[in-house]
Image 1: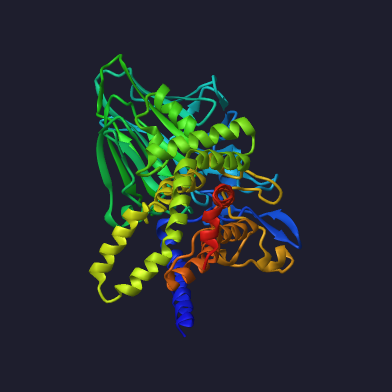
Image 2: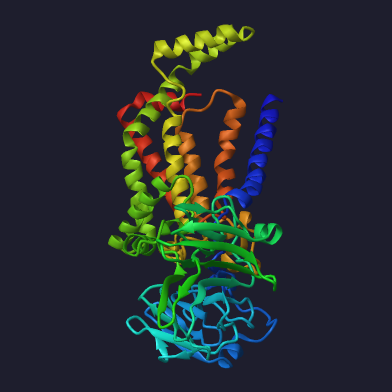
Length: 568
């Protein structure tokens, strides 16, 4: 009867963990991105992923994007990593795709579209201009004259507009070979009196990102103001609480997706007024304005700012921070509190990938490095656990002898630990040390665009997505897609099996409830880990295998430990 009660209690506790974890993870620890592939009749095929594109086509609410692009005068954008165009009506950068990234794993999948013109579905664009009084200013309807037909690295384009009242406005746009645009805004005054103008830059986005905003991953309005990163505001906050304004010297602001970023970078030495706003049409806007500039007759005034529009690649963000002086641009990736630890893990993993050429093998090598560094600590853990098993009969006797006197039992137990030189907490240290490493790898696989769509071997085509090969639907021969927590891929199944084998090698707990919980825990974790990135499942599985090998090696050197462990 007692065994049945213990089993029921263990099952109830496991169910609470399983379903409670699903609730917690949705809010605080989101799992991997949506699967990149699936199996149909035993064959692996890519899954179209329009949601991976922050401005993917949807049923047209205004006009088709191609129609909008065709009906406005434009200057082409051609770089090694970008393709798009500048709208001469309004001087807007509103057509941009990232040619290094596709929406899905299919070879003919469209490139990731980052910016889209106003009047098309899910408009998203950047613009530069001026505000002021007492002079005619360019507007969103102004048609600018371009000095060239194509903007490319080393081939800048100047947009010009004359207001017919003695002032000429020029926007000289240049772009590097990655994702950074530079805008030099110049007002030339040929009139008879001084004029005052305030340069501004803005990013307008019609709808929030499709990517989830969570406790561990910020998606939405983002910026660095007065040397401090701000992840506080969401799209919902801006919609409900209204405009959020900041005064800052240096820094940047914009909108962040999981992998992509658009950000305005004002002069890092000038004070600017920055803001996140809710537009009149229901969209969202990030903008900054400078102090008014007085331009005397016969003089000109120029203001330089930048626009980043591209992928949040770690080395590239660091390059812009170091070489262009963009204040804390690395904060575009929300590493969280443990950035000091996570970035070195990423750097090591990326270095291994560059040396080996396969991220899966790089993760396996990282696992070997981690287990190697923790080898001495793990040895002490195993020895302590085996020693605890040796003294368990004495502990059981003490529990029987002092079962009605808890204080005396604690004293005798402590005395026993001292006499036998065992530490019941020693086994916790390696686990505690591995938690930040595991969490760091989780964040790297979640946030680093470098891991997106990276294959391992065989059916693992994307290490940042869950393992797609599941026996639940007979490897695709049954025509249905199981829910995420039931889609047990091969890797999470191997994770559960190796975890069970690892527990079998450990000394069995004396408490019957603990024993039942530990017997079920590997299979609970198998379901918990099913929706997570295959790279994370691979790391844990390999770590389990190395732990089993280390335990076997220890027992081969100390047969008495193995006998104590197997004793019932």
